[in-house]
Length: 120
Image (tube, rainbow, N blue to C red; front, top):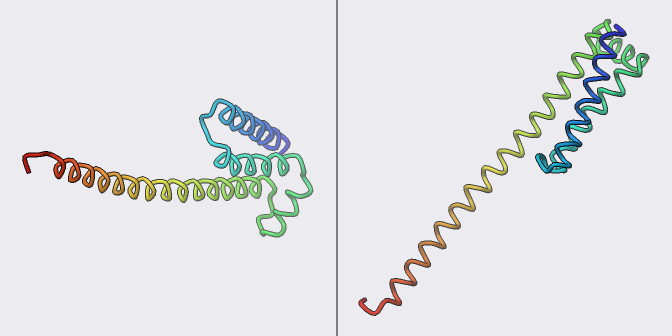
């Protein structure tokens, strides 16, 4: 059990470091990094607070603290991935709307230029 908790501590510290480094190098925007940082912080707290992990295992009926830790980890990352999917969907919709607006503007510009040419 202690080995798993130590591995999860290392993993969460590594994740926090990677996210902060990515924000610093502008590979990820700050607003997108918040959910990753929050998930890593929860994992860090759970991996160091054994009594809380035991309580979560008892409340969920899992009975085993390592299994509870893995279930919580999976749930956290599913939530982060769901949030990322929502952001990607929103950005895709915004890109489609922007492309449509650009096409309308190009059409209007071409129509305006054709009306200005003296041969018409």
